[in-house]
Amino acid sequence: MKRILRALGIKTKTRHPDPTGGKPGVAVCKNCGVAYRKGAWRSQLDYDEHVHKDKTSVMFIHCPACDLAKNNMFRGRIAVYNIPTNILDSITDTIHFLANKARANDPLNRILTLIHAPQAIELTTAADHLAEDITHELKKKFKPFRISAYRTGAHDEIVIVKMDFNTK
Image (cartoon, rainbow, N blue to C red; front, side, top):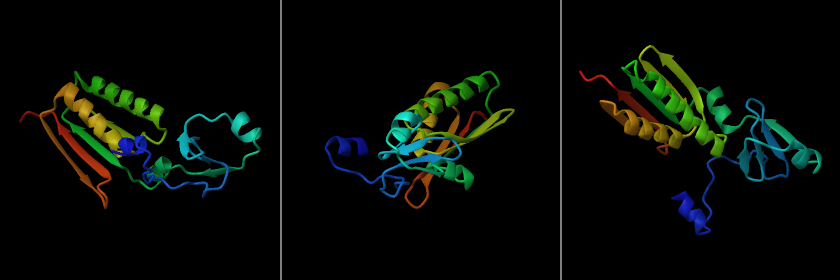
């Protein structure tokens, strides 16, 4: 919906406030190094061109994704249980592929934690739509026996998903 509104020239509220406070300059995350410049978070920033040449001020802060991780919070949580050992590596590869693809588009879309157990995987994400994309792809590709998914939070901004491959 936001894409349609933006295409029509209607501005939508951004999810993350401007860390520079509207002042000219660049904000760089202390943890992961992503940079905020001219209204967007970027994974790559040419410091010679955008900082040194323009004599732009630089602020060091925590990006919204690192803030979530630091505060043990998340926007998406996926727990996959009773995974057959023959597809465990494929599921892990699919999760990493989708996370890398999402992070290439937006550096704030990332996996915050990923825990492996012998037949289970539990992960948290910094973006609710990343959790939804991973869930959709796992459901389509591996067909788990049971899935429960719901949204929670004050504005339904958190996605919780449980998948189970147990047929019993």
